[in-house]
Image 1 (tube, rainbow, N blue to C red):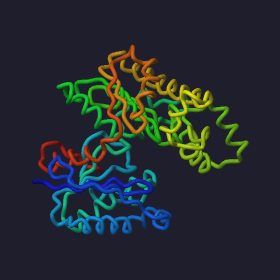
Image 2: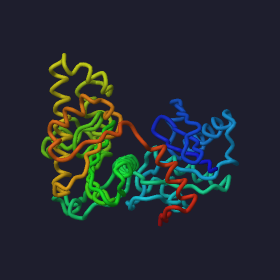
Image 3: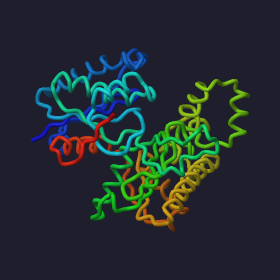
Image 4: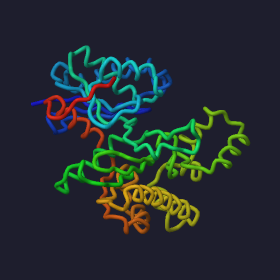
Length: 352
């Protein structure tokens, strides 16, 4: 039997789990206090690591019995999808924030340190920077600016593989459009195992989302920044944390908003606008796939709301059938891929 520790650290909490082979034996979400969260990421790492070790000990789980560690991927240089060993180079890039500072960096940092301490192999699968874009979609109209690939890669690839497996096919043999809908929204064209186009979800390109503005006409965005006297840093924070549905309603409670859909005309129009924006993005991906789409897959927290899915479906059902994998499959996928890597059943990529 193979025991795997899964680490999935976010901005306010640390999700951990223990899998025995492919069965989850233990899962915990450690919510951290504001003192810890106010520290720079590099200083949070040892504090969060101590919290994780203490939580495991409290449940009589000992790291000496762990065979492999699976970590959520952080901000790294663009790489192709797959499973990677967390090595010195990856750790250094995560710790230094060479490609950006984000709480997800902590998963690999802490996994690496635990791996060294207990001599355990450490893996990460499909980090957010997976870049399989075709060159044509990188162009923006500004020679000095190219589109980047930053999206919910882990969950995208997980649900695409689930659909392929349930259809008795390989992921590399299908064309699917995956729409991950949560705090951020990313909509990708998966062509035969590669994500050839996706909106840059971190800063809100594409549809608006719960806290992200989405794409905005250039002149209006520039005028807004000038009128608000915002710096670039201010704008990044506003566009990713204070915009979208939250800016209109003051809340990110999508379920509560949908409960008002039939009674509040203002809320109804906003929700209809969101559905249309998502449908338009799905149509763009269908065009890139030349209409050869096996399935449209919805995932993420918003996908639990069947009424909202129906609003989008009215616009896109002519493209392809729809499958819903509501929520996220990150922990399970990390464990599964680490199990396969540990037993040398898949290729292990090297981060250079």
